[in-house]
Image 1 (spheres, rainbow, N blue to C red):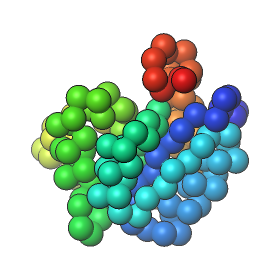
Image 2 (image 1 turned 45 degrees about the horizontal axis):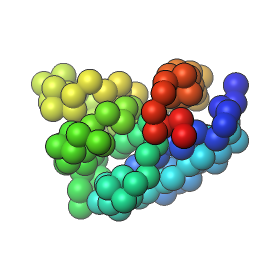
Image 3 (image 1 turned 180 degrees about the vertical axis):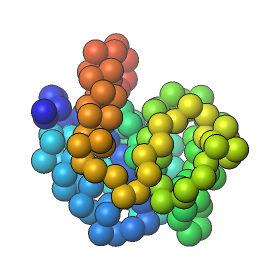
Image 4 (image 1 turned 45 degrees about the vertical axis):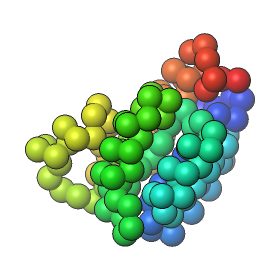
Length: 135
């Protein structure tokens, strides 16, 4: 199922191969993809006006971690409303998941049959919601 019109999706992951593969797959699904290997650059893009309908976020990255990215995102009311799906190889998140504040978690490696419906669900919400994400 492909998205229409090309909804913006952000991918933040320091694994070049995974990030590039996800970007290719999501582009083929009809999404407009902004991908970042660095969480600080992704945060700067958000602060500069990039408004994805969803952020796919890795947690364990050098420099600014996904945890730190999410904390900074939640401090900004404009950015805090952007949904996040965490994609991580971290095995145990139960205690620390509270700091992520209402995100879905997909554990690496994950199957596309799991990821694509999750992304499509958020895309459908964004396409049907009034506001800047659908402009």
